Length: 419
Image 1 (cartoon, rainbow, N blue to C red):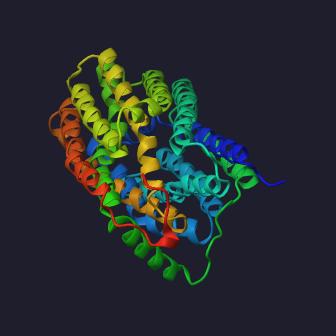
Image 2: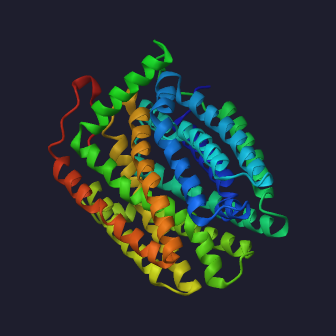
């Protein structure tokens, strides 16, 4: 029996839930694993910057897999790679490996995530367009935010308290098992619908074609390019905040082993993410254009991060970081729908991977720089600067808004709904 749009949405949400549960099982304590292995703050953030560098290196090659071999193949490769690299993270901790080993494993871990990026969203958009789904993409992506929040809240709480009851390495073993389960579920339920992979040519030729497509359908369209460039700042800051807030919260409470508390923080941000997903349609209704939603989200998020650095107390800091998560989740569906509906189906996964490449590039520079600032001064100062850096995305988003109405039109055979 052929799948219906309801089946596709159900599979998409199941994958989102399992993925967030697996990934978030270490979120409360992932940065602490490096510190426990003997790395300094600057070294740990340099290693994590290699993770974002890995994103930049692998995004276009792995994006070509989704467009030439299929979204399903790309997803299965992502699940398999993440399972193995999660176990390598655990091994590096057990061996008290140096910064070079952590950096190498971080690059490989990023490769696993890049097989996911673009492929999952492209898969569901392809299928729903093929089935002439009458609903709104924002609503599908917003519901995914809710499911992601549920998985993140459960995974982060369970993983953090498991670490407190055992040790920092056990949640990584649990995560590897969950990722293996996710891969098995995707093998059973995820099949390409509304998209026929193009497998002609050798891999190197495919990568060149995908790089060319990224430039043609992404970079050379001002309405898309400026939104992508804005993510250099907002995503770069996001990488640092997600990593550095954990030792900062432990510093605020004065207990270096309060891992359960970090699980509570991660769960609170996940709950805020769920609320943001539920409010995404309300956020969108406040503005006529999607770019206006993005501008408001970046401005408010930057202000909240400055406030986070100034907080000084645990309750206020937790409230501000949760509010920042709510705002990010509330505007993300508008960004996803904006980009997806401006891209032709055959190149959608590639350009979305290119978008992730640009986003991660900001983290490569900002993480070690802000980490160095945290070592030289303190965590609060680094978060205040991070909030100000995020505001640098505003001029770029304003350019996107200005060019949106006059963005180059795709050729007739590439026409897609306008944002």
